[in-house]
Image (cartoon, rainbow over all chains, first blue to last red; front, side):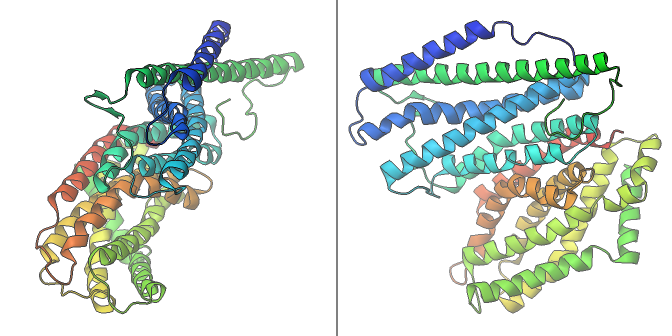
Length: 244
Length: 224
């Protein structure tokens, strides 16, 4: 792997993230008005919706990075794709749990099937849960990167398609707050949502950059250790799901 | 095109002589239908329930075929031979998807009457044209996605596990559309003759997108 410094700009990005998340939390609790129907529990919306949106965008982002790998054959792209999907999966599970809590509080059930957004989200998460086992079961690193890229592209395209198919299947009970005609929110809620959306997006970007830097540093360290010990640089490191 | 035809002919001849995959698929589908009789504790079913049971039997049986699709190529050097030949890589996708499609057609020719015999309440005459249309599109989804997934899974260590694990979630939208399209025409009374257009359209769109997608990425699965 090339010795790019992924740590560059990480500090300012982290500070910006902390700033936005803090601002979002303050706005959620002190600025945004209480929802007339649902009351306090509606505030989970400001965490749940951004988590879900960022996670889905993260999956698509991982697919786009994978196109980069198939075009160039540069393993750095595979690493970007891997980290993007890994992070998106964590965000997605966060979104699923927060959504479940919200559903219990406002609809009275932990899980409802007549809700297309929830169901399609679950299918996407189930699909991407197979990403790591797939990687782990291919030993050759080059083949692993290639197959994982094919998977990432296919499933990245699957994300929007799946939402179309499932939303046809069921009626809407999810609050349609964001539609193509614009956000149906009072201004104070809209601004709060925007700030937390930016905050969560920045959090994703920071964590992505962080993990890239960490993986990169580890790979450089291993390389140095091998050079010092006089070992063969190209010998595989043993099986791993992560591209190293 | 002639390459795809050659590979397809090879696959069909292999299946005719060794009968390795297709009988297992057919048997599996029929046994699944029989198990549903006991699991649901019903003598006859109709409508959405019938469509769901049949789609599940079809899905499970197709998983057997998907798992076996590339095994012979891998074990007996078919991949190496194909890669050495100066031919378009997409031909492999076309040939394997067509083979799987034909397997599914044969499977249905046996499984649909068996389903009628064991479980289905309404007669087959009226819904048959609609059912054929829905199954033709369902087979396309199963064979295209199945071939892609099989191509990914065949080089992994746990290919029998990885195949269904990736395949099932990818096929969920197609199965939703297929079951919903077949549901109304399998009603015992007041059944419309044609399947709902909305679901047939969704299924066709899904087929089209995945066919293009599979064609775009399949080459990378064959490189050495």
